[in-house]
Image (cartoon, rainbow, N blue to C red; front, side, top):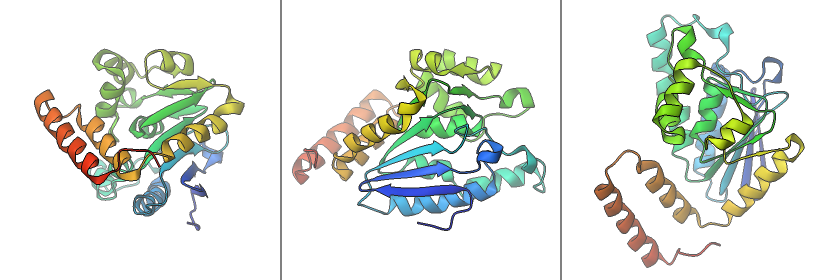
Length: 245
């Protein structure tokens, strides 16, 4: 996939890399990036030969949040939200059948933090910092932050992050489970690649099924979750897909 204005797409065997590529504004998220990601993730979803995706940022940051130069440019805040929901990049990212990894360095603020929280795995360079500052600006973390933060951090930590808007460094993020690991900046790409390669050996249908079960676990009761788990286990056993490829 080529021709994107705001992202870079690379493929190395079964692993795809998407790099947010607006380094001059710390990869601030704008409508062009939204459209590029929507197109790239849609194509990725339909490519059965790709088993894992790594998301990262170019330059000095992962993503500094929404591009403030676009704030107020829509006819209304309601219209802006409706356009965003019609091109649901976030729902698409969350529902990908591939394993998704956020490799974070520098700032992951606002929607940048929310992009990371939507991924199945998060690892960060030691210089990474995370924040959801929207409340202080009279908004909410309306990408998905109010829903992904409590799932990743628990209720108390999520309320702290969302309501205070404070910054969390990589060391604290690792301690509270926001990321799986903090690594030296020079090792971030190699460690993300190592994890992606490991995950890419899992059968695609098996990986997608497990992802759906775990993500849905926070949305349904235990009884319903166990019913769905049993049904998937029977289907996977019958298909002979119980081993990594």
